[in-house]
Length: 117
Image (cartoon, rainbow, N blue to C red; front, side):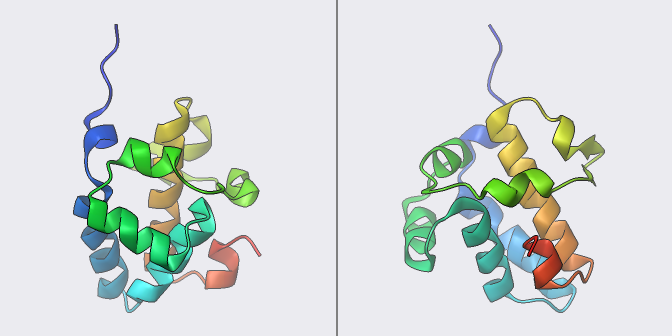
């Protein structure tokens, strides 16, 4: 029996400030991070805030996402030494997609390119 990766049981709200800090350190905004999360998951701003308030874990956060963006399959590249498109476990792949989008934001990519417009 395999054990779940600990990120699955980590509350999304506990990692969220690190996404914001990473973006703000590079001159980007919380609003841009929120826009990325909402684009990826289909959560509205209000629903995102409710998930944060509930301290939802990562696995539940992605399982309850209203509508994962079909364009997320266009997200390619390496995060933490792992190629996102090669991640087989579905929830872990969603987490890596989000990590990659926040990385792109922090690296100065335009929102249009990040959101695969």
